[in-house]
Image (cartoon, rainbow, N blue to C red):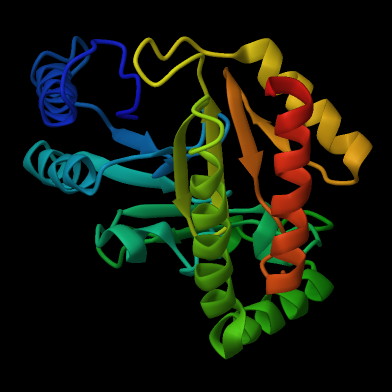
Length: 258
């Protein structure tokens, strides 16, 4: 959110501007106050953007002030950041928390968690569809939560940091690695032409990803920010496997940028 921000101002000033504009929207809503604000605390397809904690804390205050629900979309952050929820990581409690994908450990499952102060679904509106209560998915999800507490989240934090440190070491040789954004296994690498001008290298990033395929590793791209490479391995990855990922990433970068 703050690297190459569109206004070109210092990080603190940019956060203040975003918060001020949010407050203005709350105050001047043409149809009354907003019913809710949906936020992805770490925006995956927007370019692996980690929202600043100060922004989220103040957003929570604004939602309270204007009696507006704060909704966290945690479909991609659940477990992957080394915490069960991004809400825990940032220390900000939403009114509604939405989960999916990873929740079922590979099986179809979604969930909506709501604050005690809100009225939940009525009994006659639940489980009305054939696959609305998939028992197998729920068993898998329960087992996954057990594994989270027995080493998986700790491994996610440790190996995610190890990968980020390894990528940062590459910056010395490849200054085109402009920014590395990492929380747990939620890692984004942004490529620019140089550290000063910071012009996005979209074609080169795509070429690095393609080179990765040839070298036996799959990377993603950062959605609308096509100069961002996603590094998002399994949460149970081992250190020697991280070393392999780093070697193949550097080989792929060298093939394109060297």
